[in-house]
Length: 434
Ligand SMILES: *Cc1c(COP(=O)(O)O)cnc(C)c1O
Image (cartoon, rainbow, N blue to C red; front, side, top):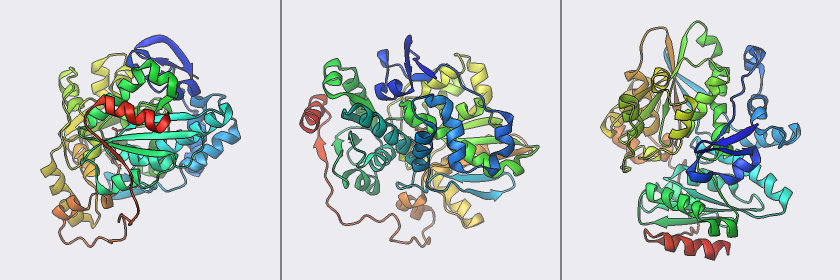
């Protein structure tokens, strides 16, 4: 499989090169030159396959001959060693729980897959790879946990000071070894801008062999397709004769893009709902056909506080700029924090089931976009409610949280603190990698 740069279509690389490069020339994202389709026989027997078998089938065409069958099987089995259960709310709504990995949020899968790919690459070349990542919380913790102690790979994580949860900060700053955490006095968009700027700096890039771990990286974004297949495997019987709608709580749009790819591969998803919080750039685009990046604003569903979603170009590319076709397949939703609190409360009252703020955004988005009785809707629960105890307690004051779950242990945490200055960021890179 070849990958090309959306902004410079003659820049064509294989999976390994595209993964190492991260972002292409002119800030272009890499996309596969075609989306392979799976045989009907795959879908006929999917419920009899293990998650690892499904993962290997789905990912094989994308990695080509970069890995042997054995290596790919090994990578996938280390990527998805936990469960992806579906929780049924009622006949028409269910929730795919994507938070059973080490950081209790869905980004574990992409980070683990990418980490293991990079471990292979570094090992082959006997060369250190340095990964830069910007995070609003979940990416950083998933990448930190995913790459921890993978030999040959250094990770430097940049996050906005005071805007990630204590638990996320703990997961990024407590590991040490090949993981370095840096907080800046700014927003997530500032973090993302610094990382992009570092990549565009030829000198830095050359000196440090830089690579990215944001959801723009093909090695992170593609394995997210697996969630949708794992959901289908569990729901196949129930979906017979029904239309399947999937609502994705969306920030940088990596997860929903992966879903769109899964659909193109043949997975029978009828349509998607992209559910936004107050960071509603994509929602506005779906309404008006015009893309206007916004400044990010802080919400309860903070992993989606993204004003200029980085995977937008991949979605537009998928539809060859045909806005009508795109909006036919994807509906938007915009959900506020107060609606989120009400929804968490309501779902708990009705089902004795606790959802996190991101899932609440997705669930309301699904409800607002339900069209008829014949539909079955799945919401991706992208994080565990245990990561958002203060919000849950606002909604359900009586909920008896098990204090040991999600608790922060007393360990030494280390981070660098810098002002909102690229020069200072560069100094840290020199210090840690130089
Ligand atoms: C990252 C994240 C999202 C948003 O996913 P994108 O791929 O950036 O759209 C949603 N929920 C949680 C919990 C996340 O960590």
